[in-house]
Length: 506
Image 1 (cartoon, rainbow, N blue to C red):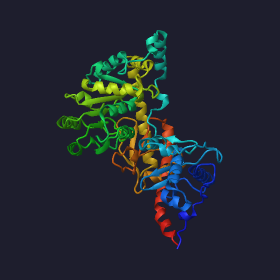
Image 2 (cartoon, rainbow, N blue to C red):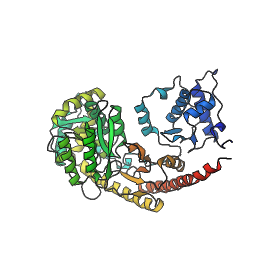
Image 3 (cartoon, one colour):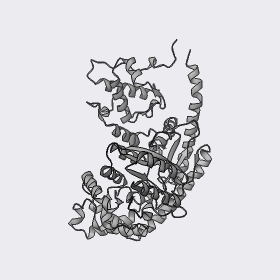
Image 4 (tube, rainbow, N blue to C red):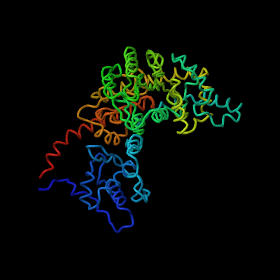
């Protein structure tokens, strides 16, 4: 008895071993053409690599290379345990995609493949996408006029030092300005204990290079910032997640993880956590520091959104409460001002500066001097506080718009209203997962960040992260309306699946 719709009906001819084109590229072109002709639809699951290789009479390596190339082109997305799904449609005419002499995706490291899924794995096939998957504020909120004015002053009295190489640890002027600015936030640190980085993400990679080796363990919140997971794992570390509730990381579970795994470091986002938006309570902050002292483990405190509060200011930073020299404090100008100025910082205990500076020097020698001086000028100007006041108010308006729209168009989504930051963390109605939602969202013209990207230990496939800071209120309302339609569409697919499976046997 034959199953209707089985892989025996796969509508692609086997690759020709005598052809001039590599076998895997013949398969790529066949599947791409099939998507273009409608033989494969967005959301459709393709055969497992082993099954398709057996059917077509080719090696599994050929099928793997084809699937990886199609993932790189944004047409397929692979899921461990769930198979490979069509998530996009090709542009142009058949044969328009460039041919490669080698199966480059097969040669990529496992971590490069994982990183590519984060950067390129969200389908963008709709001509008018509403991008809730971003991590930046609306460009209309950038302090462009203030920065251009300050830049003009810098260039007008410029000297060769603005265009020369800075010390690896950073420009002394900016380090001095940052020391004073951090002191105004309760963090006492000397300029010599500050390292300038090219954005926040480089700061994590510098920490990983400086302190992690293959086999080390890093403890994080679960969920946590997805790029931090990649940075630590690329250094060969194992990442262990600790649950988060409405007050932040669960202290008892953290102590259990410290006792069991003896990690090399703990990575936390205590203030307006990415992706959940929660704030670690004052009592838990003190408890976390006490645990770190007891187990002699350093903490990397990432504070990228602490200035973006909507009601009351958050509790003191861990670095401000730290009396034992346990905390490496991370900030970034890119998140509180403009993404294009890639200037971040690590404020660390003096003993940590040598390995951190060495790691930074071997990443990119130094951060651009002109960018550092511009950030220094902005931080010590009256423009900064005016900008932060406007950014807080505008992000609050956008948050409120998203909350209202979700309650209207997505009543089955569960979420907490974040008190600051850029993001809202939502739980999808069961049994819908992001595997079902992402293709539907792509069809409806909305992009979201899937929960599994933020999961240190797997799971979270019933959650999504939505960025409200990047879009105007009207655009948010339209995007949430589309999201509601996409969720309903995905629910319908899930509900029909058992009946379709039962009907497929004849």
